[in-house]
Amino acid sequence: MTPVRMIVSTLALAACVAAVPASAKPSSILGAWTIVSSTPAPWVKPGEPPLPSDEKELIGHQIVFSKNAVMAPSPPLNARCRKPNYEYRNYDFGWLFEGNLPEPQDKAAAALGFKEKFAPGVSTGCEGVSDFGFLDDNTALFGLNNRIYRIERKKR
Image (cartoon, rainbow, N blue to C red; front, top):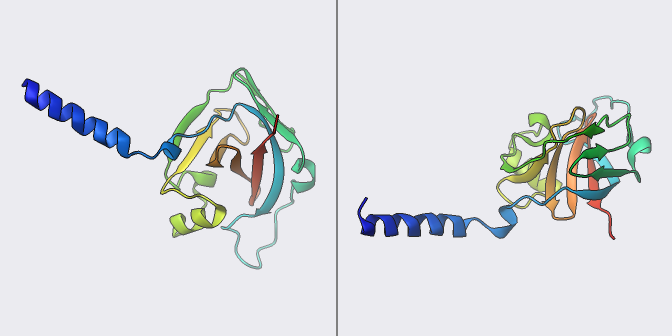
């Protein structure tokens, strides 16, 4: 590759990286979070009988994510694990809630509070509830039994 082409290629790559918004980088999940609310999932059909809810056992409880473990109310989350393998990335909306968002998925995601054309998120690699989508640095969502739960980073 000629020096001129190398410079042009480098500049083009830099422009692409600069075009990604700062909010595109998923937040770190590490720390203590509190389960603050729950709503019926958008894929639940009107009139469909609700699944038994774990809402009372979860609201107000903490999930603690550390480098070496995830500690959460178990059951019902069954998210306790040692040696989580955190995978951060920007997911398309089909990833959210195991692909259960109704079409059009971008509108369903926006109604839940996602502001981008993707869902910044993390998968813990643990059994049970393992996927969390970030609304912002201090708020994330997860799905369980046809409900959407909202967690907020615990203030220090």
